[in-house]
Length: 129
Image (cartoon, rainbow, N blue to C red; front, side):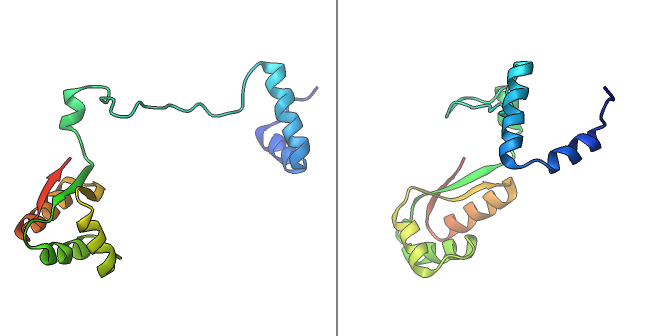
């Protein structure tokens, strides 16, 4: 039997129907005792990343969490609308009233610090995680 190249195999698979291809995959898995399913790595929630302190020092994504709006709720709503693009007045108000709530997620250090400064200037209590 002549050895088929990758291109020739792909061309042959292109001619198969989905049912024929599914049957081929099942036969392939049985013949070679493998599975075509991709392995999925699941991390436990709250688990510390490998590397411990080194990983924490290299953190490059931060969440900005609004703890409370403080006395100047209207100013905080304005800052929310400025920082979070696409929010209307009602959405921003609902977000502020549901504190503690994440305002920004997975942003870089500079953006997180800038947002925190804006919120604190408006009188809100904010944490960066």
